[in-house]
Length: 205
Image 1: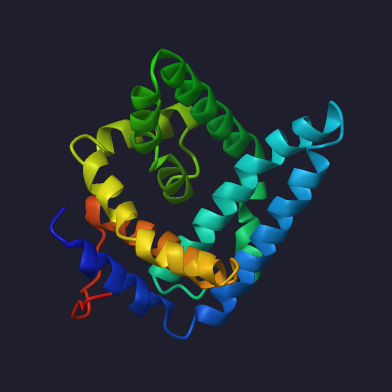
Image 2: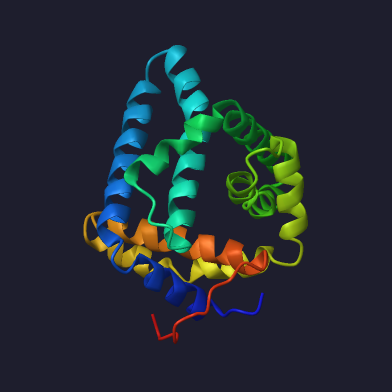
């Protein structure tokens, strides 16, 4: 990865210029859906099944939307539901990622934590290659993240300060932090796959 963490965040801010409104709107809808799923989850037996079934498609849809923002494609809000067009594949990917991460975690916490970063690019790969299988997306993520897991971990650490500030706003700040975080991750994916855009001059953010 040639880009610095500051450059990746600068690319994200540049991509979000003029798109903050729709990005915050999608974040609010996603949060509301997450809250609804959490409430449904409390229904005995049926709730956890519904939550488990829909989480994969929602996650894929949000990834599709924010990658579109990163690439300046001007995605509409409806794009966040595009994951349901690949419902079964998104579900299989979600299931396999949860299963493999759980199995590694049963060994030790650290291997489970590493597994999260090993599989972190699977949804990005699936949204770029909708014909790929869920297991192939996971394998491709493993290959892509060789020697890069620590870099993504450190990139995540650079958002800790912003997270603290968001907490101080009683959580309202997360409506802006979440798009910033997700678009930065999309630029990380584009950087390590060779699909980059000329970065604006980085600053100290």
